[in-house]
Image (spheres, rainbow, N blue to C red):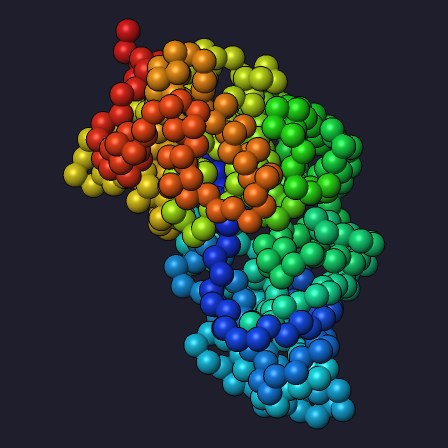
Length: 472
């Protein structure tokens, strides 16, 4: 989300299932399992080129299809960043390679196959907005999104995934599914491409927090110390686990870099993205220790909370994006209040700032529903602001409505706890509008279809509590 208020711009990234969009649809038919070993080599990082060798075994079809996942910010899939150089069979025979609608087709490729390709991480920055969430690589190290690195078999089940990294001297690897110094074993293809990876001479901190392993990989010079950031993350992680139970994974990596936009002397910039087991956090290096416990702390709380609302409770496509992102933004504030980094008066001030920024859009002819904004997923700053700030306002109004309808006995936080428990009982469940309406009905004994249609999916003015608008 992009917002600006009295010298502040905040950018908060999308959560799990939103940060990456699967570009290719898997073909039907018999699924044949294969094993895949990737060797990722970075020789000349200043050139922004990553060389990859993919060894596949067990492929029995006559053709191999390779696809990739596109970053959600990209309006079209950046096919050009990948260059498939060579494919050979187990006997070393060259195999024919062709392109078909953004995928690569390797002919007569039964059995063991080796594919060599490279990916170019320079020249991708189409705009100042998009560059915040793409991979970066230079002589000082890099932040690699799996979607920018890995081609994967389309229409095939991969039963064993292994990734080995060959890095320049003095560089380290920080991967959410790391098994050794330079090796990782993502459990699924989705975890392969939906991961954020740090490579280079990063400073690192590792802590056990409420039974999970949390790793911070930090690069940059900040006005606060690494220990200060570690304490902030430890507090919000501990609070969220204590409130909602264990997340899905036992290891999480925060990749922390300087935000690239530092031109304006009065604006501080922040951005975050959530992936499978990893989070990217971009912080303005001018942020001091006191400011760290405000927007950056909220950003970290937001991204980590997606482990529940986004991973545990998972939507299909972007149907419930407005709820996932809006309510996550709301709960990030509640997390800071619970850890006493923020008091309720300061929360009210932050909300009023957001309201003043978005109020002209709410009153204009260009207004769209929060649900519609959620379908457009970070395509431009204005729509993104409507999704995150508008989603926050819908969450606040929903919390107030639940409290009124239940005589103060229930709240939005109670609804979240119910959704999480149901998701744990039904691991294959998908979060839909019907599921939300059913949960609200179960919690309050009332029908919520009209309310949601008016305020989330429609454009009716919300009935804000006074602390939002500043009314007395």
